[in-house]
Image (tube, rainbow, N blue to C red; front, side, top):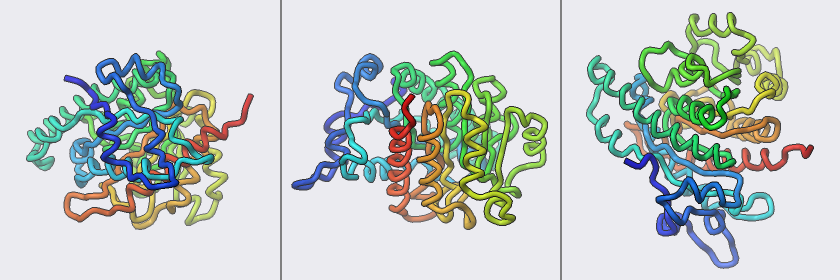
Length: 347
């Protein structure tokens, strides 16, 4: 089975809303023409970034979270493609690749209940299959010399993305993550809460920096692990910035960036870091959308970036109707990250 559904011109036309005297990003974005040989063609396309979706919520459910993370990819893509292509950001620097094939796994997971031990085991086994598919595709993108921008899906996908980078480069990478949670839970079977601990255990991840972590939503065990390995694991807390006012947002962000600056680095953001964004673990006390956009831009500008991963957005939570603003927010984050990378200081 193919790990990826590569998008065609027909797929793109269904998403882009054209208008006289305007040029949308989707009208200039690059596509793969030979879908069967996409790896070979991707290496030759003149672009810098690759858009990839992972429309699943199995990892979230395997971590006892609320379903819905599979719904972020399409509205995010729709919003991004229908932004204006202009001198601030042009679609010609981006390739729309497609999405990871997960429909078969989502169908298997549909009736499973994580409160049932047997079902939970199966859910976590399905996450392992997603890991294989994602890491294979990420390896090919990194080998092509492009920067993947990945829209999830659960934060479980951080693990196969990091592994894919490692497999392509044959070296450990650094990662920065804006997230209330470290996602460094025990190695108890794969789910959205242990992507980084698995990557660290398997030695794909070198240094890991967590920005705006929430103090009361991380276990003492995890906090001790960060303390005992503080040469490789680092966090700044939301409370130090916004409640105790020990540090400013800008200063704390620059400290987090400095911790991972020395190696090629992945950039992660969990949308549950942002106040009132629909996610599996929605927060009423988080950073603002503007601060999230600043994070994306500054990381793109300041780091030797390998990828950008936006996780956990759930415009259609399992028990709620759609929130269309989430797709637009993700589109802003994608654009800000790309602009940050394009503003890197020249050597």
